[in-house]
Length: 202
Image (cartoon, rainbow, N blue to C red; front, side, top):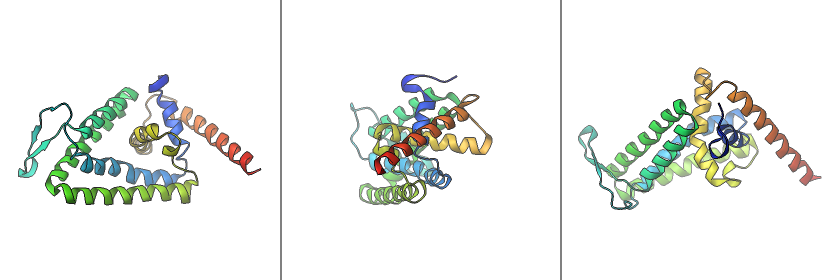
């Protein structure tokens, strides 16, 4: 059953989907959205700890890394919480992926050190964002959602591509009729957008 207000997944999904209806653009986002989240943690690893929270020991592959409870951790917690509230099953998977990005990103950042981690992180961000802008400019022919609603776009992007992948792979939807409802809303929003553009031209 769908939720309303802030946790109305259909509304959020339709908003994001209206900017990502071209299959190639969707595919490019599937390739690049989660790497953007991962590489962000390379950069956020070096932000200061908040409220002097303790560090957590982590030692895979014989290399000790402290998981610092900093901005990266709290953003991960925020994203994971939202996704679980949106949909328990897919949200739990998304939450695991978020924490995996935080843990592995922290590990790699500590391994590379500040200077190299920032170079790798910024290069990955530039490459992935370029791929997404190409998707919008060449294939979607519409500006990214973040230009209209920055917060909503950043919050929904990882969950959007995950749900798209789950739907393609196994026909998953949060509840019966979800994708049909979203498709109708997306079509309506795209139609409204095209109508506004046509009025501007004329």
